[in-house]
Image (cartoon, rainbow, N blue to C red; front, side, top):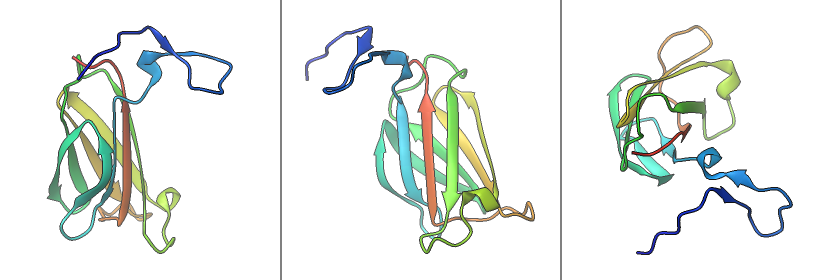
Length: 124
């Protein structure tokens, strides 16, 4: 595989360029109920189901440090209980993974059928 090293990128048809560091370094869309499984992902090696409403996203390529930015959303396949009805906490304390804790509107940990996670930052 070849590597192209650049500082900024611009997609075909766009008028503005953006720094490469602004492009997502990792993302995943996964089923968080039953046996969890990724539907699609980039730079995600595996997922860990720690307990009800607690997941860990393990990266294929580590971040340069634990100061990357991560966000996540949650919801159900049938459109009920979308993410805004619950609480989601994303934390990163190591460069190799990110933790996700999901709960319902009553702040009780809850598994969700649709979970999406995205991380931005510099890879190691």
